[in-house]
Each structure stands twice: as C-alpha cells, then as structure tokens.
Amino acid sequence: MTTAGEAALRRVLAVFDLLIDAVDEDTLVPALLPLLLRAVPGDSIVWAPHPVRAGPVSLPADLLDAPLLAAFERGAGADPLVAHTTRGPGFPVRRSDLQSRADVTAMAVYDEVYRPLGAEHQLAMSFPGGRSGGVPRTVCLAVSRRHGDFTDADLATAAMLRDRLGRAMGRLAHASGPADARSAPAGVRALVTRREAAVLTLLAHGLTNEQIAHRLAISPRTVDKHLEHAYPKLRVCGRVEAANLWRAGA
Image (cartoon, rainbow, N blue to C red):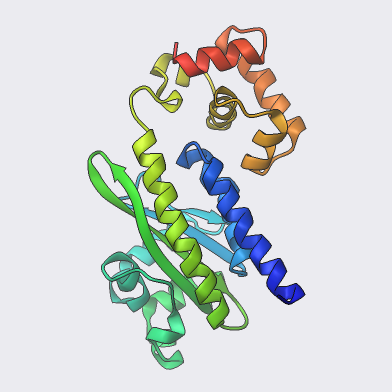
C-alpha cells in the first residue's frame, strides 16, 4: 500500500474507532464531523437528520444561517442531489454524476445557497438514523468543495463510511431510552449547559478526561473547566459523585 493509501486508511479507521466508542448522537456528531471531513476531504460538511430534531449540524459551525436555510428549503425540491438523499437510494454520489454543470448553475438554489457557500462540487449520501418519536429517521450527509471534483476513491471511502455510520446510529437509537444517562430528569438537565451535559454523560460512562477531550474535540483542560462549572450546579464535590449522580439520573 502506498503512503497516501496508508494515510487514507488511517483516516477511515479513526472514524470507525470513534463510532465504536460512541455513547450518544449529541456527543458523537461534533467529534465526528472533523474526522469525516478528513476521510472525504472537502471545505465543509453538513449533517442533516430527517425528520429534523435540532436542525442541521455543519463544519464550519457557522456555515449555515437562517436566510441560507430558508433559501435551501425553497429550492431543495428541484435539486436532484437532495432527491437522491431524501427520497432515493441514498448511496454516495457526486453532483456531477447527476447533473451537467449548466444544469447545476441554472438552479435557483445554486445562486442562493451553493455558490455563496463555495459548494461548487458536492458528494452526498444518506443512511438510517434510528428513530425519533417512533418515526424512522434518515441522516443526510453532504461534503462540499470549492475546487476539484470528488474522485472514485472518495466515493469508495464514503461507501465504507456509510455502512458503519448507519449501524452506529441504529445502535445509539436502540441504546437510548428512559433509563439512559442522557435522559436524566429535567431538574438536573436544566442546571447544566449542553456542553457540560455532554461531558457528564461521557464521564458517567467511565471515560477519562483525555478520552472525553478526544471524543468532543476539545482539550483536557476544557473538560476540567466544564466539570468545575458543573459540580456546584449538581451540588457534588468531585468526578466520582458527579458520575454516579448523572448515571443514576437523580
């Protein structure tokens, strides 16, 4: 295997490792997107569950604003790549496999959304995303580039990732339930920020600060700070007591 091939394989295996250790979608996705964007190189990536639970998640995080999302909703119905991921088979495909360049630039959604975002070339796919309120969910994933179309190797990598992503999301949906640590009573959940809750969930699953930092793509010192802020809110004195309380959902 060439050096480039070995590097590509390492990037894919980094995604697989993260999926194996994932405990819930909220903590998984922020750490997952940078790894996916290295495995299938691009300038931006969007993770969009359907039905929508909390809106799309993107990297860069500020990629999508309200006017762009509204414009996308207006024009998405005429976009064959969107149709492929939302109503079609959802296997990885390049926009250039579905449309000529002239057809792309003729779409209103290109002028209003894709061109401002620098999404001149796109690779998209979808996969099962578990269930939300008893309704099956699908996650649509789109990687965009300003320059250079995606290669056949990128498609093959995306196909490998798609299978693992679908299985991981199914596992997380099955594991999530009333007794899950994420579902602690509202009185506890309301006390902490979303980021503190993510750290506490991983802490309750026995992860060290270094492992939590890796999972959430933050520094161990930032993990310490989140825990320091959470302890007084939960009226606990340290990590063991916090982990036990969060695990019990008390």
